[in-house]
Amino acid sequence: MKNQFDFDLERIIDIIKEKQFKKVGLQFPEGFKRQAFSISQKLEEATGANILISGNPCFGACDIDTTLLGKVEVMFHFGHSKMGNLENVVFIETRSNVDVLPCVKTALPLLATNRIGLITTVQHIHKLDEISNFLLENEKKGITGKGDLRVSYPGQVLGCNFTAARVDCDEYLYIGSGIFHPLGVAIATGKRVVAADAYLNQAIEVSPVKFLRKRSGYIVKSMEAKVFGIIVSSKSGQNRIGLAKKLAEIAKKHGKKAQIIMMDLVTPEQLLAFKVDAYVNTACPRITIDDSERFHVPVLTPQEFEIVLGERKWETLVMDEILEEKCKNNE
Ligand code: SF4
Image (cartoon, rainbow, N blue to C red; front, side, top):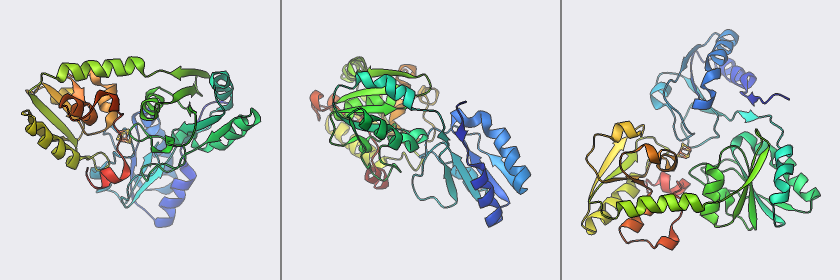
């Protein structure tokens, strides 16, 4: 079966027709932008509505194009599950129909215990029951955790939130592509994580050793830094200004200069001109990790910065997460 994503067009058409919306916005993450034109055309033909597509980068449900939202009656946001309570945003989860069982079968010999925490992204969340049943047939119990309000489903993890992985299990099975999420869970929980890629039908045990060594290098490099830029995102779902202010205060207490920089899209290019020795990123935690080599100075997570300042012990280094209540309270 060809791998396809469900863009839920019938539901979208029903919503537009029922509410008689005339001005409709569409927002796609980078991976789905290729489909944007054909989807827009189909919706226009079926409903007669005027469609505007967001051209801004989009990496998560935290990243709603509020400018476009202000110009339309409804906006359909693809590829992510609901986050926050913005009116007139409809989240289209865009689930995948890929068969996950082959990769779970491939992963089975790598699972060393019988209590398996199951984690995945929203694209495969509807497959967790099927995976649990398969594990049960193989004398293993699949366990899913509820997570906080930032996630919509038990077992769902985000690049910034592993709360659904905090369950009583011996090891984890992650179903999805890439290693960021499983790596995050391995570091956040200290347990083994086997990552099964349904698209490539591959499974590997994820080791955080190399990753932590690299992060340690950035911490050591920042020990002598005197001037820090503390990055805050203006995106509502990433904004941790409260945390940034606390970090700036602690930095000053330790005789360091720290200036808060507020920005929408955080890129190495935008930060190149500032004269700082290191950055601390309170925006999307993935930026710190995924783009680390593209910045001209080290970019630290808030927890790594605490180690640099002597406020946290190395052994207690954790992954940076944005938790529901922290973001709501701007902490
Ligand atoms: S903060 Fe980053 S990881 Fe979290 S939802 Fe937004 S884009 Fe995804």
